Length: 452
Image (cartoon, rainbow, N blue to C red):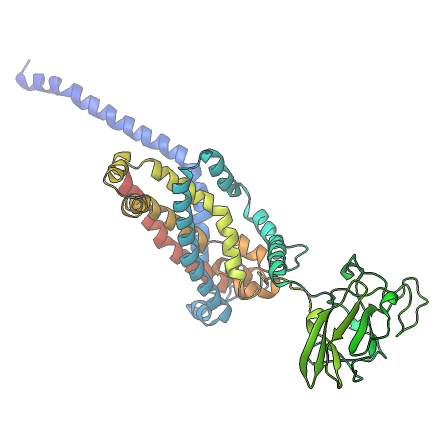
């Protein structure tokens, strides 16, 4: 046997082993591809194909038969509704992620000092389990302008009435034929001049039963002749329960209107004021001789305060952002809290030993060390708010839908919500994709960098 044959025999086992390893790796790749193939198929069908189709569709007109090139993109930036949607999206991107990140950071730091931290985190995270549809319905009701339905306006009206008060009889008015004339400001004045020693009966109608105070008593007992030098009168409800009363006359069953503000004016100036008693009576004493006019100020008849128009054109976007904060604050708090739990405690303790207070530790140590986590949370929320649709569509009423619209809702409205222009809608979708992709790339790169 020659030396060459021996060399070949010795070299064959390693070569065979390398071949087997290559076959094993190739077989492993094939098996991996077989397992990944269903996911790739779904990804292509649900993501890649719609993206490519939308890009192609954006170059055609509404019917999809005529090629218009960049016409849809040009029209997109000329349409006032789309420009408003871009502006609102910019507001969302700037405001919502910043507020959520700040709130999440503050709550995560404070929760560490709470005894029942787990229960507190659970309560804040629970809104994440609520769908955007349900959350939109909840906040649509909460923001209702009617204080009897909207809880926010009920609270606002209660606080306002506690400090500013409310009108006594918002629906009251003078009965036709009474000696009362309506002023320009909504007040009522006696048409006949009065002097000290006179008495007057001022009948009103239209007072709702719920507006009549419980302490109101019959007005008939208040009808007296005025004493010398006294101007006297009664303000009453000129309506007899069950009928049978005489208009313009104080009947025995007719109630006085207590709490009504009454003024005595002379030459357009108020010289005396008072408030009616339980039986509606009032009197002015110490008046100088001369002619006076009795006035029921407009404040008695002012409509009740109805609160804030949360879903009006001016506040609809901040109101929807508030609903979004309610849902996502727990998410930001939990992620930032996880980052906070991984901070080196020796650095914090060393700072305390050096005499730093909690605010200095928070500003100089905690925030810088949490910067990577805060960045990831912020960028993730930026991506999320760019796609917000449900809350805007559900919470914003029809008349202000255009004032609250963002790119996602505008894309749907243009394509399916009445516009029926899927060419322009596809262009809006492509614009939204182009805005989201950079943030996604940034987040992925930062995640990979942190893994190293």
